Image (tube, rainbow, N blue to C red; front, top):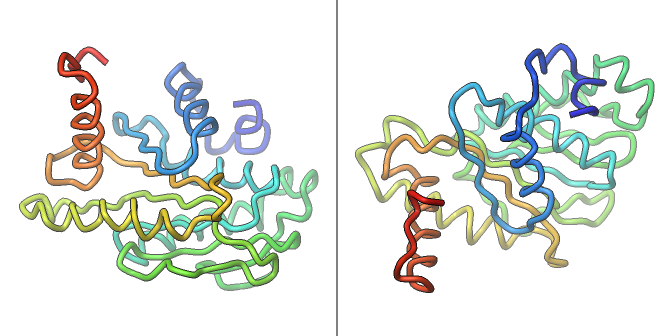
Length: 216
């Protein structure tokens, strides 16, 4: 929260709460796929989808991918990031190596050789690397994966769930410390993120027949 309020006061105009602390703590302590859900207006996208990756680059991350339901939505996230890394004078005065070296807002490198890239969920992720550092993605941000027009089709959500847990998971750094951060709202059972929640609940019920997700 200190980092956010120090360098992005124009974005974070409301107080932080326990939910923000909890989401950061869980994401930071887990690798693999972590889904973050919550009410609209919680700030999932700006906190964990935009500022968290910038903070991780400062901490040493060198390849981040933003993905969404299509490439245009993904490029909105990288354009947002590009704008901050180009025009945020206070951030750049302390971390000048964050300045982008390229003009392409959908796939660019920073002065410290970190790479930030946009990919639609339907595009391929296998084998992608940052050639300047010879590293695979360390963080993949999945935001706006589900579309309302797909509510009536369970298969679309299932395919996107499989894509995230299998292909995206397989594209992470093989060291096992990579993160897939999945942001979304639990709108409809056919949504991919809702099916992911159900998958987790079913696995927990297998271990404990008395498990009740409403009490957790």
